[in-house]
Length: 378
Image 1 (tube, rainbow, N blue to C red):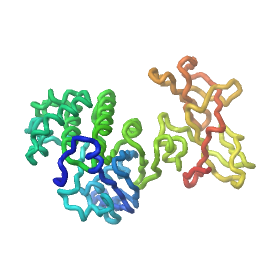
Image 2 (cartoon, rainbow, N blue to C red):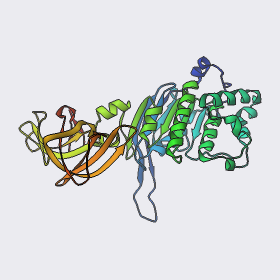
Image 3 (cartoon, one colour):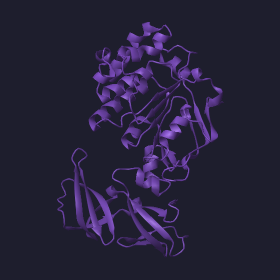
Image 4 (cartoon, rainbow, N blue to C red):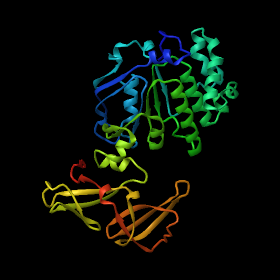
């Protein structure tokens, strides 16, 4: 799925001219029911629209089964949507010949040809177009940027590479071709935490050096923040919200985004409106919009770092303590009655399991959501 129209440029000015904008308009996709379980048709992608500008990087995050990978395959042309259109530079994808689309796809598994050495995999595209003289320089450049010593892997076959090395070779192979668009489907999902971090950094360097319009599917928020200009939160086939990580974190559109974005997750307390104040089981008395009727069911949300210890606060029994040494805080879980909540406290605050601590929160950091619809109340 590569383009023969342009040789791979060796400077960024020429590279920018190869970039492609992606527009997705009202795309829908369903899959037939499972004949064994008698499930109904599954709606994988449900009326998704967005635009990715030339050279931007967008991450799509969401729980397993939310439709991320299906959407990516629609954007690549591997799956045809039931409705809606994907455009590359305002041209419908289906009208662009396969050989002219310039799509690079990096899967969760490296998808390397088993009996090919790395040298052949990385250089295949250029060798096919009689541009083999470009391969050594490009390999040296990629190796220099990432620091992974790609040249040392050139004589090895996939079975002689670790999982991390296979993914790095796959990415290097993609970046030696004439791609206009790069699509990643959780390429580091099977790597351990340290290797994921290293690979993330290497990929960021490569995308900075070789800017290409990129869509990156992941369930890892750190990965999304590290690599993407914008993040789309997907749930049940729909985009719940699109924005920067800070926008999603500070101003979530609904309860799903509020709970999905941020680690540890936002604390939620169910309650109701009474005389322009919010009242709950454990906490209450905080001012809320005065146009809400008494009895309106409202869920209050507060991030763990906006809760603190206070002598005359709300009591809670300590149920769990998790220290985060590098980040210099401890996550403390407490319960009272039917409610549980987390606090992010300094490591030097001595807390013991089973004891009662007294908690309070910063009312100015509270967010409110309509309990029935989940939509945030301004």
